[in-house]
Length: 221
Image (cartoon, rainbow, N blue to C red; front, side):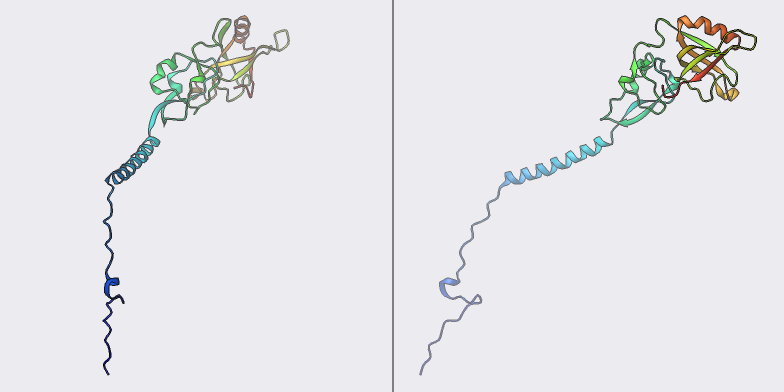
């Protein structure tokens, strides 16, 4: 008895026409999309680089190193150059220091303050018409310790034992325009104050006889 032989199966377990693979169409290349992707990558890298560089950019600005009272003129000794970020602050550029030195403080400015345009004015309300500057030579006990340029003080008549009258305020809110050099005496009593011109004569008269004292007005800087 003869046994019919089956055709041998191929490695995939298929035989005949079924074992033939269908042709696969070649992948379609899109050079335009590839180029766009490269440009996007490069553009993103460039933007990141610019942001990093921009965040580290610094410009020269003006910082106040000494207290400047409202109405006082800026001085070269009271300002310095400092580097700050280029954006985010309405700073006054160091290149504008000549204009700053020709202007006056609109408010009392404390040391360490970064100068902005709103802090300066072209004319001083304290040194305008009707005002006068008066020099005072005070002894220990006639002025509090630590009085600084830009402070507000009361100028008070303090009669001596030989004088008649009672003590009274001659200037209710005088601006301390300048303070003597404490480095020489340690506690200089030299003050220059800005007062109303009508009170200047009387203050000078009593100051010459040593009958003037000043009291600091706290919280008025």
